[in-house]
Amino acid sequence: MGNVDDDGATFQQNYVKCSNGTAKASTPISNGHIPNHSVEQWRDEQQEEQHNDQEQELQLLLNKQLKFSAPAYTEIRTRTGGLKLKGVNEGSYHPEKQAEANGYVSQTGSKCDKFKPSRADGVLSAEQEHYQKTSFEDVPLHTACLTYLGFYLLMILGYINQLLFVPKVATEKGREGYVTLYDAFESFYSRYVYRRVRDCWNRPICSVPGDELVLKDRVTDDYGWSFRFTGTETRCLNLGSYNYLGFAAATGTCADESEQRARQKGLAYCSPRSELGNTQLHIDLERLTARYLGVEDAIVFGMGFATNALNLPSLLGPNCLVVSDEKNHASIILGLRLSGATTRVFKHNNMRDLERVLRNGICYGNPKNGGKPWNKIMILVEGIFSMEGSIVRLPEIIALKKKYKAYLYLDEAHSIGSMGPTGRGVVEYFGADPNDVDILMGTFTKSFGSAGGYIAGSKKLIDFLRTNSHAHCYASSISPPIVQQIYTSMSIIMGEDNTDTGRNKVQQLARNTRYFRRRLAQMGVITYGHEDSPVVPMLVYLFSKIGAVIRTLTTRHIAVVGAGFPATPIMEGRIRFCLSAAHTKEQLDYALDVIDDVSENLGLKYSRKSRDPQPIEY
Image (tube, rainbow, N blue to C red):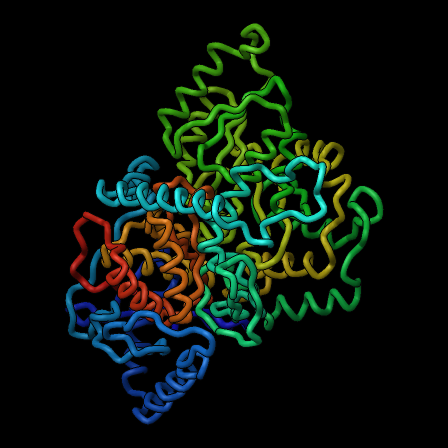
């Protein structure tokens, strides 16, 4: 239902009838552009569809019901319980309910809502778009009190448990005379706090992370100290993987060409790029990446985390100042520590605070060097912040960068491929010039369904990294099938396969994102981030509720990821949904209905914002 098949099938949008009977695109894509199809063409298609044989429609509906009524959706072999859902046909992505209940607008329903304008339309400034489209609602006071009370109660019970009962699995053996190997608090926290919800993390899967995945069932007989596999599996709707464009599939062009490359070239080169691990395919990938991003040159690496952690020390030194967003990724933080540069943190996406830090850095210089000027000042931000779901305010940052003559390092790990009309990231989303960003960094582990990372920019920058980067000189080069997966998926996104599959996937992801976020807002739960971001954090706050939501959704065949302290502040425990172009509307409706009932039963509807009473169009 509006998804893009792996074989490059024609992309189809869902259109609905407005009250005047004319056809209209239900949801523009994230950048504000409408796909290149006229209303008249779609009106003709709608009329043709209405004349289709009713028997074919009934047969199609029957086939869909059979597909989503498979035993994996109607039976849980190793789990029992869960919530009794209101108005949801258990185990089915096609629950029988009225059109308005699942977000559809009926053929004779209410008037279509006009969509809010985007910066891509030239209507809003970057600042206006940020405040209009980004949500960070404050936690209610009583919820904050309960969250702190619950967390400290867990800590107190953990200390009592540690004093009275220490199981054998928590005691080191053969360590007489040695000092303790682990930090005391970290060891305590992992054993007596995290262990209580340990079953909700590190869950093994045994399938590709497509729109669905298969979890290997496991149980614990000692309250989370250890696990054993049951030998059974559970198929779940995948709302936790970074497979934004659906390229991480076992079938299709990418999989076929990667398999062929592995048979031809093997699985690894067993050497760094600077020695015997450099091939023509690596060079072609770097050229394609540079052309894709619109810059002079690019260099690729075998690991996304190491792209930040091992390249930042090559670009920065002890007499450099880095102005870093407080929500930047751990790989950035590690790279800055290794570099020895002085780091000043500014409030998340706060341009006033960023300018304050830049101004003070220039005025006062390096206090460790007698106030002399810094050798280099660099602003370091992400495109989409993976834990917040927010989008960088790039035009304003570029303006400040030019004003204070600083360098700009942009990490597009989550935004490349998933943002912009043609998937070229937040630079394209905001219509910025790629040359205004000094260092473009990104990974191939998300939208491209592969592994590794890249840094792109000027020819001089890339030549410097080829000589000085530890990730280039010492790490093994990317394996042949991984390179092929990246090359093929990037070519599809760029349209160099002579199809519209790539553009259609980007549009489908944008449509799924907007629909999913608006439905969650209509439920009354608190979500963070920009409404065009495919990373959707839903705040649950209480530590115990993180585990309750994950376990309950798993019993309903929905796999999600939770995040709590210390990955987030104590007050911001959350469930993080990651959307994909591979998701169909039926799958999203099923998930949203389950989330609605779980939120109602567990008391997660904290939002005090007014709710849109109109059905949300897809």
